[in-house]
Length: 175
Image (cartoon, rainbow, N blue to C red; front, side, top):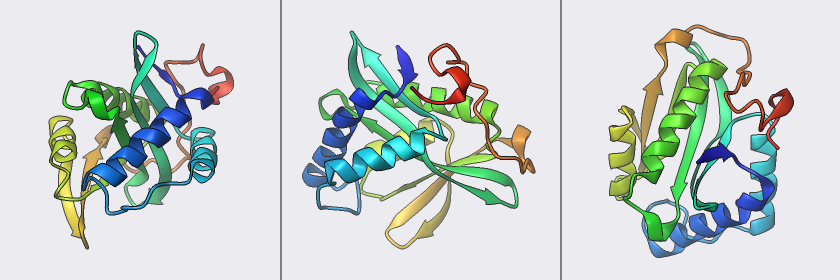
C-alpha cells in the first residue's frame, strides 16, 4: 500500500538515510543527519509537496518525496528523494513508489522532476533509468537526472495537489 507520509514514518526515513550515508557511497554527504533537523525539514516540505510511503504488512519499506520546487522557464520543477529500507533494496519498492510520486506530480502540475545522484550509486542510477529519467548534466560529483512532464510544460501557477489520496489528505494538506 502507498499512502501519504505521516509523522510517525519520519524516523524510519531518517534511519534509512543515515544507514546509506554511513555504510555506502550513495551520497556525497558522509556524516549522519541530525534527527531533529531532518524531521523539521520533512514536516515543512510535506506541508506543500507530496511525500509518500510504501507499506508492506503495515511496515514502511520505501519513501519518495519532493523536497523542494523551483519555477523554471519550462514550468515548476521538483527535486525528488527516494529511499528504500536498506534490507529491502533491489526488490522493486523504489520503482513502485517513484512511479506513484511521478503520477501525482503530473496531476499537481509539475513540468519536470529532478534527482541528483552520484555515479557510485548504481542502484539509484538503475532506478531512475527504469522510471524514464534521463541524464541531463553533470554538476561536480553529481549527475542531474530529469523526468519531463510535457503536458505541464509552460505552466506557471504553483503546483497544487489535486491528490488521488484526497480521503487521506483532506484539504490537500498531508496528515
